[in-house]
Image 1 (cartoon, one colour):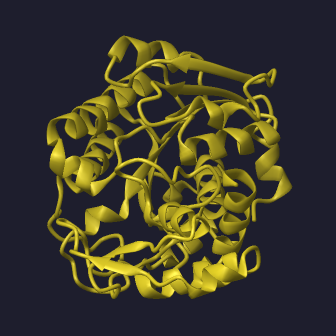
Image 2 (image 1 turned 180 degrees about the horizontal axis):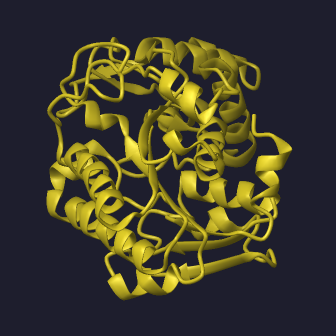
Length: 333
């Protein structure tokens, strides 16, 4: 939880959320507006959706800039008079990056560099950015600890690691303060269940709601540290508002610290959906080939975030899945 004194600091502050029409970005925009911040959303709608902005698009403290982070001039304009940046804009998905590494590189590295330069030039107080658990690559040890990473296993993972390197250099060279948040498999409201690169939880939920079998890549033993969106929102707010000097210019795992395999995930989703439609309990998963570039197991140590950021995940995996299933049932039906 974030105390009232810290939250009060946001009143009147201007926060730029890149990728603000996306799943995580739109949830961040809504939370910041609820805390009386002024919010600027920068998005080119390549993956973000205008519908995600409907809840607050007419809010007096909200402004939308439709632009691409690959446009350096647009980044400079967007960062003018901004206090904080929450940089969420990126092309996600390991399979997408394997299919099209050049575009992934252009957005995730060139676009990231444009945002760093714009933040520096506009003397932004702090640059918070979405890092990724994919950075751990082939490191086998569990749980994952921030200072021990392996070799990246996909172009996407490379881009997210390069982001961390660039942020560190910009602090040392130009004094730009930043914090990187390594997200672990975030899920929750507004996450798109459709498209070739849809995340596993919304995709499985939609399949089950339509009485179709979800397809698991591999034998279902691969496991992830699934992390509910409200935990990620808390981490971003803490990263913006921390006054602990040693907490800044760091990388943090943001997760639950739990591990759920895909077979378990399907069973939990079926149990939650059973509350709305009992027939779903009888649907069985199907199995396909494992995906290239997938890490077999992922689980985070969140001790560093707890110690330095005072991060405390409010939602366990099961509690978060219950919330997500309820949202999907009410919004996809």
